[in-house]
Length: 103
Image 1 (cartoon, one colour):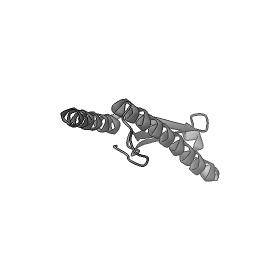
Image 2: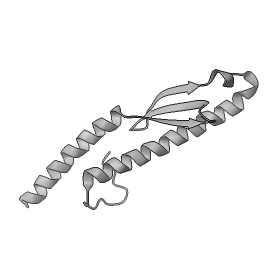
Image 3: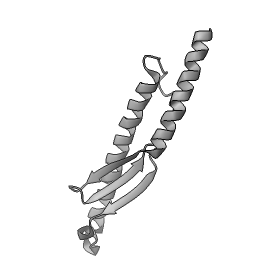
Image 4: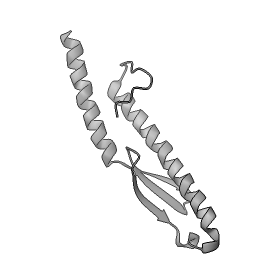
């Protein structure tokens, strides 16, 4: 029983450390061959948006909107992969029930 409690405390500490790392990690998604870049932190909050000036034309607004969405999706996928990797590092072989998100 003591061993289980010790492992639970270690996991709790690791999760807290990873949550802080996720909040401080920036992940970039790109679209349009780098013409639009979206930066998210490891928790999925948008931290930045960069648009190539050549995209700032009135007649290209629809294209720009699509590229922003695509760049955000790219960044979001990368955030999810990064979070899953960190979760695996924290839990090791410990079975985590489906749907249970420690982060």
